[in-house]
Image 1 (spheres, rainbow, N blue to C red):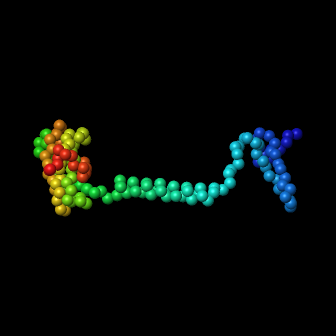
Image 2: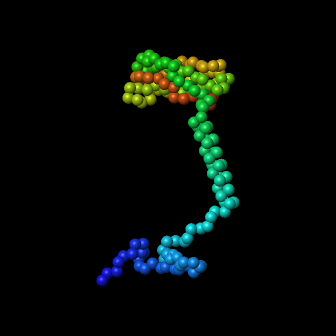
Image 3: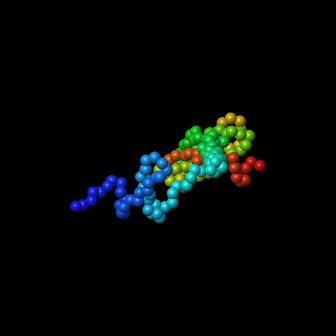
Length: 166
């Protein structure tokens, strides 16, 4: 006759059972084989360690928020293409509008032309002199392929020396 399989029994053999003798009804408690499942869980985390981890998490969160604001917050220079006109198979005229948070500083904008296949056909840096309000700058860009569009790539306050008015 076969012995029935008891639900919850260990697969590797017989479960060890210990009985509590601390009074009252004896409660069966299963103990796991030594060395098989690793050590028991450690006790609760000390309050000092808990506060230290909290401070570290707050500092890291603050740094991430600051970096995100610097990279994704409002830009100091905003630019957009106001107009473009293809002049011939090797040039395009581009007009850019630039708004700055510090209008007393000169800026540089990079404009580029694209050909029909999407390649960049030409690129140029354009000086935007200091001016109050929104500035408009128009330039003619020479291209290596017939252009189909002209656009502004981006602007910066880091004006190269060869574009400086000084």
